Every structure is written in structure tokens, then in C-alpha cells.
Image (tube, rainbow, N blue to C red; front, side, top):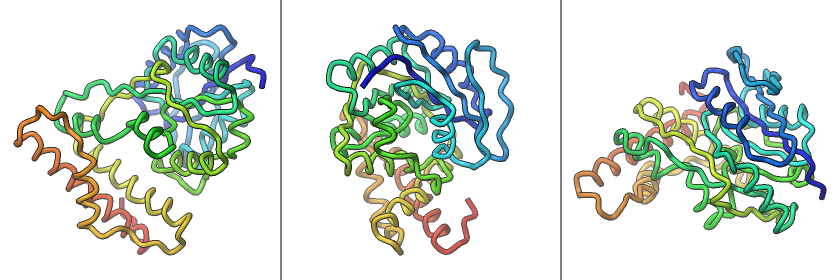
Length: 286
């Protein structure tokens, strides 16, 4: 597979305070190939983007959801390799070059899942909970053979082999997990590369955590229904146990600190359980 150029796809609603920083970091990539950046303004309520970074292509996708936005970005791009990054991520200068080196060295028929650094983890308990529970790319690759699209790079032919993102997922929740599952079933290798790094800041507000938990509750139910039509949401107690087990805090934390994380895990479990039940019963109030 030839690797002569790269396209970076950035889905956005246009309202991210980090978008301009993301685009600045993409303009500073230390890459020996032509780089094309495609920003996809997504959804019926998207906001206009005042882009001051030269060479950035802006396109529109009215169908809601990052799945539809990424698919639009693929159609509007031309690079031999495609990279996906979230609009609130900051790419390290060697992000692309490290991933491309991995593809050139080990074969272009694989998906490179780069590391995701979590800045601001110690701002408060919400950000710390976020940092230990979400976007654990290395663990996803190692233990689940999966990845999240905040940081993945592959040859276009590899993406076409796996197929487009499932646009029935209209939220940022599990659409990347579903896609990675298809890649795994087709024996497409997903490899972790620590050098291909981006920084994804942590959330700081309880309402942000609530919204994320609600999205994940709906997304996980949809994902489960792919293999088990008519699947029911998990029982609340089992969801609480699962979320508390996920709160893997550093060993040197005191009991009080751990109890805070467990309390937040219990809240997340309830929000996920409630959102999944609302989706199944058709009363999705968000």
C-alpha cells in the first residue's frame, strides 16, 4: 500500500473552545508527507467556524452524530492514509510521523491507535474520575482489541475494508467501539503506539459527567442490541458494581478519596441505567 499523503478528519459541532487549538496543533505536525485537514461541521444545530488556519477544508454534514461526520470527512478527503482526532484534542508535533513510521515498519494493513494523554486530571474530582475511567486507549487495545476514535490512523484501504461508521449511532457513544468490533472480526490488527500521542482535556463539571454517562448508557444498549436484538439494559445493581470496579484509582489514595470516586461511579451507573431504560421505553428525555 502506498503512503503518499494523509487526511485528518475532525468532526465538530463548532462550539468546542479547544477547536482552534486542535487545528493549530495539526498545522504544526512534523510530517514528511502532504497533510490535508478536513473539519466536518455536524448536525442541524451546528455553529459556524471562524477558521484562521490556512489549508483547512471545512465541509458540512447535516445528519447528527460523529459517525455521520467521520463518514462525510472520508468522502471529502483524498489522502492515502486517514487519521481521526476529536475537536478538543491537541496533537503532539510528532503525532502523525510516529503513526506513519509504525505503518511503514509493521505494515499498512493495520490500525494505529495512539495514546491519549489526559491533561487537567487533578483540577477536581470530576476531572480525576474522568482521567481514570475514560479514554484508556492502551487498555482498550490490550484487553478488548478495540480503540476509540479520538486518536486512530490507518490506510484508506484499511478503512474501506472495515467499512463506514454506523450512522444509526447519532451520539458520541459506542459508534467507534462498534466499528472497532467489525475490524476485529475481520482480523484487522489494532496496535497501540505511545509515541503517536494526543492530549484530551478532562471534563470538570458534574453536568458534563452526567451527559457523558447518559450518552454511554444509550450507546451501550444500542451496541448490545447489534448482537442480541431486544436486549434489555443491565440491572441497576450490576451496573453500579461494574462502574465501581472501573474506578481504578492510584494505590496511595486515602479511603475518603476512594469513597468519592466510588460515589461518582454510583452516580454514573444510575445515569447510564436510567438513560438506557428511557431509550428502550421510548421516553428518552436526556
